[in-house]
Amino acid sequence: MDEILEILEKDARTTPEEIAKMLNMTPRAVKNTIKRYEKDGVILKYKTIVNKELVRDDDSEVRALIEVKVAPKKDVGFDYLAERVYQFPEVSSCYLMSGTYDLLVVIEGKNLRTISNFVAEKLSPMENVRGTVTHFILQKYKEDGDILRKAKKDKRQAITL
Amino acid sequence: MTIKISKYANTIPPSGIRVFFDLVMGMKDVISLGVGEPDFVTPWNIRETGIYALENGYTSYTSNKGLVELRQDISKHLKQKYGLRYDYENEILVTVGVSEALDLALRATVDPGDEVLVPEPYYVSYGPNVILCGGKPVFIKTSPDRGFKITAKDIERHCTKKTRAIILNYPNNPTGVSYSKSELKSLAKVIIKHDLIVMSDEIYCDLTYDYAHTSIATLPGMRERTIYLNGFSKAYAMTGWRIGYVSAPENIIYAMTKIHQYTIMCVPIISQMAAREALKNGDRSVREMKREYKRRREYVVSALNEIGLTCHKPEGAFYAFPSIKNTGLSSMEFSKRLLSQEKVAVVPGTAFGPIGEGYIRISYASSLDNIKEAISRMKRFLERNKKR
Image (cartoon, rainbow over all chains, first blue to last red; front, side, top):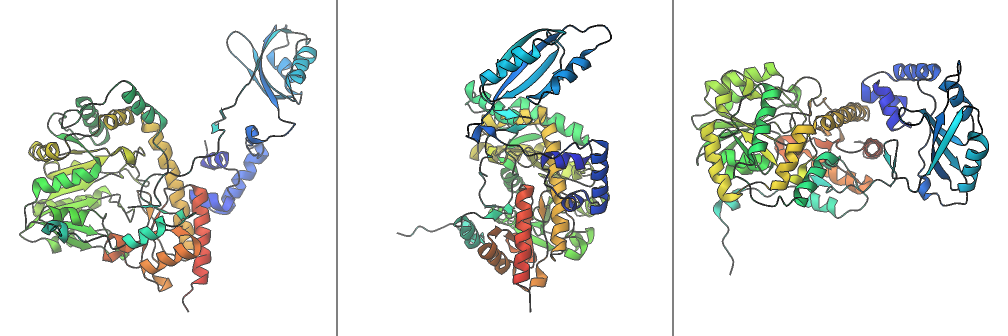
């Protein structure tokens, strides 16, 4: 992967000027590359990783992984169903899987009830859906490479030779 | 009663910048660019191996030279890395870091009165180590105009009948300077001509950014006179495990092992087992850390030059050694003021010998966020302290 992408993936706040310094390029070249990535959709958007475990408010969310078994119909592949599923705003991730089930759908909701409603009213009744298994997430430890805990303090002495 | 302190202990100079260190240690919320060790913690697979060793009761001594398996791994590693062949039975010794290895190397080869060449600026322990075995350190001053590198001529000029050895350290702490193969070849020529031993501290070899690192032991005629020193501290972020190794011709390792067995006995077994994992499965982590250091290097060098501290581009390690001469301040005064005014800690260049006057050592083994903040504080500091 291009180092510009690698740097931005680590910290999206890194400015083109800073990246230019790190990679020995001109800021202009970096800016142009980033613009191209944005235009081509390689860079989709810039977000902040919020540790929701620490956000204690009433809107705190419940998450569930739902295994979905699909009976693909002729001329209608998995993509068709996936598209119908992932358009729901409650769906935060959606993957086609190998193995004993077909789609893995990650749902976010206010509480157990909203999620079970979604499964019962939206997901299960869909044509082609043969069955679902819902797993609720109890505790998140690490997500997409980030440990959900404040970084520990530097344990080194302030000066060593 | 006052106990008399030995002559040797009295001869070694106390660290001239101890006071400064104490000042730093006593201060809170300092951004430190003064740390000579990786900011990464040891990769998890290596730590996990250490835990496993403890859990399974690996708490005993090992053979003096180190675990046979580890020495075999090191032998294999050196062969793959450089094509160098060292017999694990009698040409490799596992030590408590390069620190112990260098001390042993000197004590095994230097007699009182022998001279040992030490290019300056140098890592702090080289001089005192030579003195402690009765030798005389002869410092070779390098010039910033030539990128702090020694040349064959420099060596030639400092050689006398008593010159026994030279201590090389590349990539270098504190300057980050390293030597290419052709540069090493020209050094090797004069080293062979004067029949010197080379103690080659190549602890930063895996952190070489612009070209492949060449070990001086690989050059023709050099293996027989090279004491190759390396360890796990820098590349694998294992400083606290205190483990390194030395490879050298059999008679040297034999002598070093004798001293080692009476002083250290053996390196802690837990560290040795963790080191095996580092050699076996550590490559990926080393690669990732190196990439990160490289980016920081580019950033630091260009940012320092931008704020007016001229800095050559270091070829390795994780240090930059910028000049602060245009501030009109001494290294110590600069560092003290920077600390008190902006709470940024750097190391005065004079910690590495008098030639370091006018320079500071900046370690980029610190997160990019820290580095950015430190640089912006230094910029403010420079503007405030402009020479009138």
